[in-house]
Amino acid sequence: MTIAVVGGGLAGLSAAWELRRAGADVVVLHSERHPGGVIVTERRDGFVVEGGPDGFLAAEPDIQDLARELGIGDRLVDQLAKGSTLWTGTRLEPLAEGRAAALLGIQGHAESELNRGFRSFATGMAQVVEALVAQVGPAIRAAQGVTALAPAARGWRLSVTGGSGVEAQAVILAVPAWIAARLLAALGVAAARALDEVVYYPSVTVSLAYRADQVSQRLDGTGFVAAAEAGGAVRACTYAWRKYPGRAPDGYALLRAFVGPVDGDPGAAAHAELAKILGLGGGAPLWTRAFHWPRGLPRYHGGHAERVAAVRQRLARLAPVAIAGAAFDGAGVSACVKSGREAARSILQRLGVASARG
Image (cartoon, rainbow, N blue to C red; front, side, top):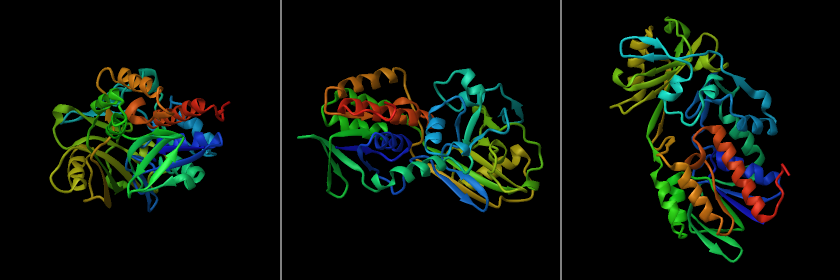
């Protein structure tokens, strides 16, 4: 019995982990060369540089439960600083707890959850991806995207880039909304066309390393969010070396800016604005590292949950196939873990196989 997981991001890897624990034969078809999706951590010269999400809400249990199962529960770290500020265009003003998350579009969380802050991993968010790959790595086929999905005698046939195919008894689609919409609409699942209403906005994150003496002004909290009327390219900034432990060597500082469209080098643009806002001195940063996400985190329109439920209701009439990931069940990393594992359990249930939870 082979189960195909399409997509090697966090949701897909979490699904594969759940399936492997139940004894299923799994193949993960991932269009990129490296697994993890938007979770990208680079470690250089004692700095921990995040290209995508740098943590998760401490109130969310799913990624923390997974970490403990993978044997890296002791690598979870708590947020150090608390609070954030608002850049008005002329000064930094304190923000109410949880307000920064709302301004940044972090959706679907109660104020009590936001108030509990964030957690991460000691050597960056990629630590959970690396632990998953260590467990399911042999099942991962990198640079093998799925171009079509068709019914077969015993489940499904997946067409893979390069002209090859994979036969599977069941499939989990842990892919962005526009890919799921295309694959499922081709099967006659008309409701899946509505998944194209999920919007992915482009984003650029820039990490900037400094000597500690270049950051002479006292910085309160974990960072700031820029007001819409403030103008400028920097939409928000995290004081990364103050937010979580071990993000920069002693005597150094690490900032992470979220930057809008700019002409030229986003690192230079971010430094120019941050120098003004934060009173940076001592010249240019030691280095900058920009990550470009042409399609970043998804944003949902009203009625999204109902549209997803309609798709799942229709999929229940087909051979075992499930959808999972940020496109459907929440963009946070913990939500992706939960979505992937729940999709795996639903497939196992349809196949009459007990999950590892029993």
